Amino acid sequence: MPKKHTRLGENIAPALSWSGAPDNVKSFAIVIEDSDAPYGTFRHWGVYNIAPTSNGLQESSDTANGSGLRFSDNNFGNRRYDGPEPPRGHGVHHYHFTVAALDVPNLTVPASAAIEAMWEEAQNQMLAKSSLMGTFQQV
Figure 1 (tube, rainbow, N blue to C red):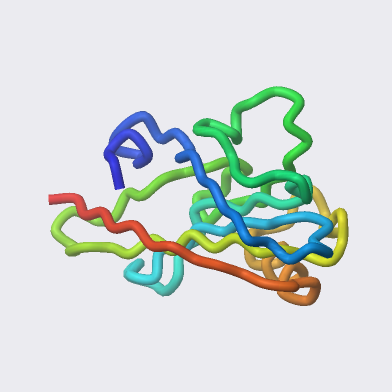
Figure 2: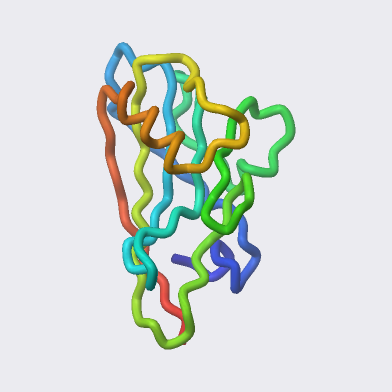
């Protein structure tokens, strides 16, 4: 992953795009998870209630005004994107970006919900999902 998308750089959300969603999709949700964190999976970003007509998110979408997007509290305790910041010398970390096509227009989770709660609700409404992976390490 480019350094500008990490907490060691500009810490800005990367642009994401997708295609091939089911015809009956009513919204999308996204999570970014680090599967190599020292104490188990670490969640960096949770976005939901993304319009069904969307085919991606622009860079810095978490700071755009009037987007209508909802964000879950990440494991840093912030309701926004927080990029990779693996421990120095911990080796390569794998960041899984997963987008889910949902059969509801809005997930009904509290505004203060953590990513885990949002993703659990999203999985109950999931029509399809797709993932990609980026890597980063702090040397």
